[in-house]
Structure formats: structure tokens, C-alpha cells
Image 1 (cartoon, one colour):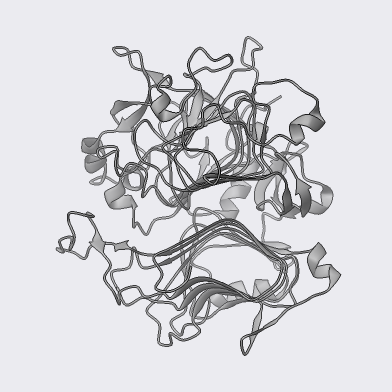
Image 2: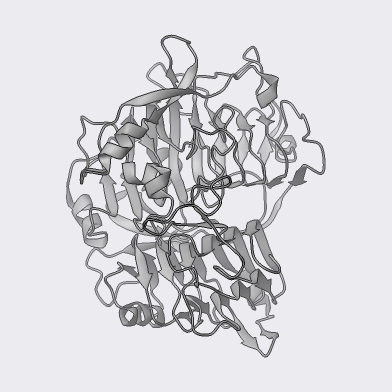
Length: 579
């Protein structure tokens, strides 16, 4: 049973103590007009103002069932369900939470720069909108006129007029979709998530919730919109309970520990599936299905080596998250999933007692979890780290002049709303995890390069200690049983900064043994924000400034010295030397 959402109460008041800025953290339904189902952050949906925005936003959905929500997720925005399982926050009716190509006016660009957004921990059982004339199933695209008008007001969540864009001709083999005559294929039901890098979908269920007629409605997951190009992405711990995984024009996608009831369909090339399975529309015993990789409805161009299967995930640590328990709706918990070995499919189970840590509303000095905003000083943050506290960072940009040093085992540093840390000006890293610290989690953070004084040996994240080029690592059995983990880490050298001398030699360095990386994007900017009055230098290629040699310098994306370092979903782009 999914609980109905509550009105403003002690739970809301407690959340507001932890997340005080109503412009960067919004709580649904309390901070919204319940009569208005549109949640449109116009400045972040619009690629011109959102792509390199300084704004960071998290929208928290309290446990409940939400009908006919219309929430296109824009740049630098994160959607978080606050239930213990994805079935505790359910979107029904039309649309729900979805992501659109940033440029539908040019399908050749489409979703290719639909970056920096995410959605986690909910169930989507929604349908698309039917065009009354063409009868095609569509998603609404906010009109450019509305987005331009919204910039002149302080209201960035206003209702907007829309144009309808067809999801795609689902019977057209060109897009690799199954025929509409295929059993259990319902084209009107599904979730749209048409994105590229740095835009993961995690701990989500599509369909599988009974409606008022006690029917389990089908639901498909669409990873591209119609004929719009899309490239790159990450699914982790996603359950498509009744429908299909529809890849469309996608390519370069990592799918880890996902479960598809029917089959996958479409796609271009370079798909990596790890510990993921499908029933393929067939019935069978559980043991047989656990051994079955995801089946493909149609495979034009998708034979090996374009699709790589790894039947089991050898070692996995799911990302930490915030949640309320149904038995204790007045206490917010930090969930810290434990290490899992040799897994197949999803894990949407409730947290064991050792996997959950209560968060005190008062956040006094004895709290095991401390929550910070960009207004807190570096000294306050470092003290919490020294005290062994778990740290949750509110949305925003943190301008620390020194490195945050993590020296205690089993600590969590979790950012929400795409929290961004700008690197110190001396070339030292944003975060340094000590070699002696086991089981640390660094999750949900963006690390931004600065204009630094010292280039040699500079980095944004250092895990372990460097001893003149030789790793200083723990080789004990304990480190293998308690590895560190990095989730949804986005490093960028250039982009929103008008200073094109920002630089870093190596974005991430791993010296320790036994570290798991789960969805990492290391991006030296190939295009950056225009200066006031500046025209694009390569208008035939980009509406932005295309970086030239010497601008936004970075030699290496990832440097690994440790042993037993595993990465699921690693993307590195545009560096001078090695990825």
C-alpha cells in the first residue's frame, strides 16, 4: 500500500531544518500549488540558460502517490523520492518525471548535450499524451516563447503552453521498436528519459503497480525521443516490471543490475550490460531467468562487439540515499547499501539496520550525519570529516580553498542537487581520501577545475596516498571485504567559467586498492559559455565557444595505480593525452 502524501507537518519542518534554502531544495507537495501539476524550472529546461547555469536544484518527493505530475527535468536538477523502496513514491496518470532532448529543433543534436541531471528512487506508472489530430503518442515540449518570457520573472516554476512531439512511430523497424502487435506491448504507457552523459536513472521501477481496476499496467522505458540523436548514459538498479527497454537512437550506454520484463529494442552501438536480465516475455523458473541476459526484440547492427554482456556483477555497492521508513515517518535516514557480490538483477529491498543511519533534525555536534550548505565554512566541513561524521551537501557550489581530507573508514560524502565543489587554487584536490580509510563513499558530486597556480600533479579527486609514483595501498583481506565506492561523479574542466585558463593535469587519481567506480564522467570542455557580447568562434559547429588548444587544459582523465579497481560506466572526453 502506497501512503497518501501528508500536509505540512513535523516531517516537513524537519526537512526544512536540514535543507533551508527553498530555491535550491523544494519539497513536494508542500512547496507547490497542489492545483498546478506543472513543475517546470524554465531557466534550467532551456538549454541556453540552463546548460552552464550556476543554479543547482533538488526536488524531494515525500512518500506518496502523485497523479498527473508534469515534471520535465532540466539541467543541474535532481529528483529524489524519499521512500525506503521505489514503490513508496509513485507517479501515475500522464507524464510524471521525464527528461527531454535539449534541442528538439535540430534532431541531429537532440539529446547529445542533455547532461547534468538525475532521478532516483520512485516508481513511474504513467502514460504519454495523445495528439487529438494525429492520434500519435507524444510528450509536451515547452515552447521557446514561454521559456524566454519566464526569464523576465522570478517565477521559474510557471505553467507553460506546450507543443506535442511524437514519441516515435513504435511500429517502425528503423527505430528498432517492436511491432504494436507484439503481445504485452502498450505504446501509450512509459517513461521518457532521453539524455546523454551525467544523467543517470537509479533505483527506479517502471510500471508494475495495480491501478484502480486492479490491473498491472505495462510501462516501457524510452531512452530517446523519436528521431532525436542521443549518446551515452547510465541505468543502475532499474526494474522495468512489465514492458520494454526502448533504446531508439541511443549509443554508448551502461546498464548495470537492471531487470526487463520483456526485451530491449533498438539502439545504435556500444551497449554494456552487467548483471542485467530479462524474462524476454517468456515464463520460466527463477534459476533459468537469472542466467538469461537481456534479450533483444530486434538486433539491427547490435551483434557483438556492439553489445557486451557480463552476466553477473562481481562486486557492487549501490549509491547512498535519503529515505523515510513507513514504520517511522518522522525520522529521515541515510541509507548506506552494503557490498554485494556476484549479483544479477535489481535490489529494491528495505535497508537492514546496519545499512541505515538516522539523521537528527537538530544537527548538533553529536549527530552521526551532518548536513551542509555552501554557506558553511571549510573549517566546519573539515571538522565533521575529522569527527567521522557522514556528510550531506546541499545543492550549490562550494568554494573551498583547501582540500577536504577524509581519514575515517566507512564515511559517506553525499551531494544532492548536483552539489559542486570548485577546486582550490593551488592545484590540490577537492577531496582526498586517505589510504587507511576503507569503505568510504563519495557520491553525487560535481568537481570543477579552477585557474590554478601549480599544474604538475594537480587533480580534482585523489583516493589514497602517492609515494613517489608508487601506490601506498592496503592489501589486507579487510580492504577487499570493505571497498570504497564512487557514484555519479562528474568532473569538468571548463564550461560555465568565463576564465578559459582553468586547468588540471589529471581529473581523478586512484592509488588505493579495492575501489568501485559507478558512473563517472570526466569531461574536458570542448565547448564553453560565451562571454558577454562574444560570438561563437565556430558557428557551423556550435552555438557556444569551441575550445582551442591551450584552453581548459587537462592531460589525463583517470589515473589508476591501485589493484582491484572496478568501474561501471566510465566516460572520459577531450583530454590531451590519456583518458
